[in-house]
Image (tube, rainbow, N blue to C red; front, side):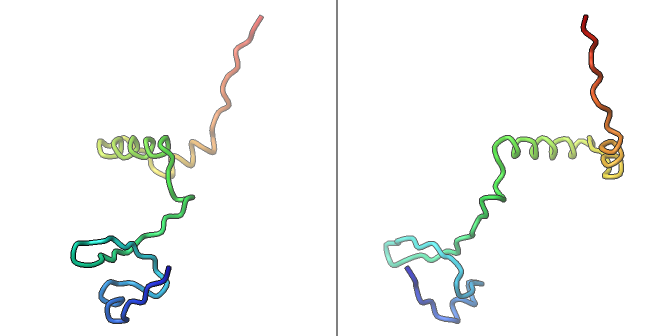
Length: 86
């Protein structure tokens, strides 16, 4: 569906032609709200979100490494030692 919104109203709402909006029925009319578009590739999985939250908590208490240290550690990553079996 397409809705025509006057140009002055578009500017006051910081909308551009082609932006998506959500319409909500009100007792005295219709509420028009900007509808952000979310790229499915930008949405974190629950596990990824938990990792981000954990990292933020650790950073708040000073547990972090510099980018240089991280790059060094990744470049010099040791392969896990294998146990000898009989």
